[in-house]
Amino acid sequence: MSEEKEIKECEGTLETYKTKVSQVNKATLTWDKDLIFVGRTNRGYEVEYDAQQQWGCSPTETLLLSVAGCMGIDMVSFLKKMKCEIKSYKMDIMGERNPTPPQY
Image (cartoon, rainbow, N blue to C red; front, side):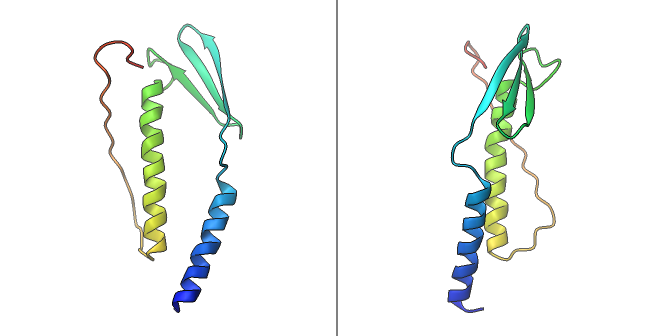
């Protein structure tokens, strides 16, 4: 494949990616009860947050997963651009909380 053709394919891929990923993210967080909240994205997805971790994720868990999700998307995108065959991908992540308040 010629270098020009590869560049054009990458540009098309990048433009497609840009149209799928909004530059502005909006969401709403609503208090439900006790220390339970419901987060709703502008696209309709919901995440339940629970400080006691009985009914939903803690905010720090979702923050950790968000960072890993961004890294994973970038990694798989780079590997695909390099024409690598991806059979599986798994990322184990760990975060350390502050021992004193604020801990969330």
